[in-house]
Image 1 (cartoon, rainbow, N blue to C red):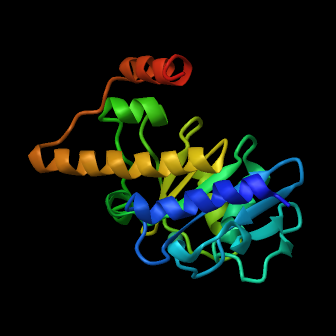
Image 2 (tube, rainbow, N blue to C red):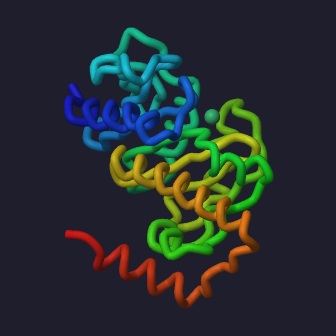
Length: 215
Ligand SMILES: [Zn+2]
């Protein structure tokens, strides 16, 4: 069951260390299949290089009940569940503590729209939600309250990054891009204070990238 989704979520998880986004077990990816109403997520504390599609844990999105899997799901399961329950058209989620992006989160600063790549992927600055603990739905509610429409990622104050998309692969791409642009802005700040792109320019880049770029 969920063969293809399991493959995609396994691929996304295995790419977190390959892309330099996680240290040890500090990140996770999940995917949601709206036809069956199930999501699959990484098991808690498992090494990425030992992860197989079969080891992933399948969970009913409406009830939160674990339906398939011998292992305990990621401790971040409640946040993934809450986002699938509340964000339409989100079918993949990635959470990381990637270094440059989390440095912005540590000082509770958004990543400013100082680069065309940020306008392309995120359509404006990547917001930062204020610190919350990880009890219950605190993280999920904070993401809903502080996310910016059309921006597929958010920083969580003093914590890390959540990124999402229409598939696990899209969520992985958003998480990789958050870290990449955070690193570039951080480097730019060693040289000076980079200005934000004007809103009109952000719109032009966003529109071209979202509607005309690629095959
Ligand atoms: Zn975390």
